[in-house]
Amino acid sequence: MADQVLVLFHESQIARIATLSAVDGVGSIGLIAVKNQFLGKKLGRQLIQDTLEWVTLQKYRSVRVVTQGDNIPACRLYKSTGFKKIDIKYLFHIWL
Image (tube, rainbow, N blue to C red; front, top):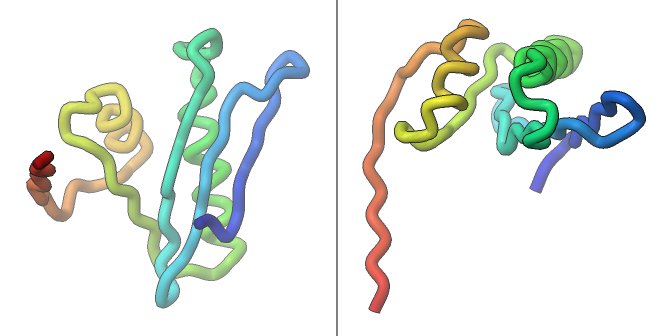
C-alpha cells in the first residue's frame, strides 16, 4: 500500500511512476518504474527528485528504499542521487 503515488507524464503518456509511504516519520520508496521507451532520458533521476520533494514537504526526517543488489540500473540510480547502502539482507524463497 502507498500513501502517495506519483504518476508523471512525458509526451502525453504515462512515462514513470513512484509509490511512496511513511512509517514513524521515515519516508519509503516502494516502487520506481520508468517505461522502457523512456529509459536513458534522465526521467528516473527526475522521479527520485520528485520523491525527495514529497518527503521534504511531509517533513519526514529521512527516506529509504529497498532494492535487489543485482538490479544494477536501480542501484546506480539510487547511488547517483545520493542514497547510501546501509544494510544488506539475503532473502531466500523455498518452493515446496
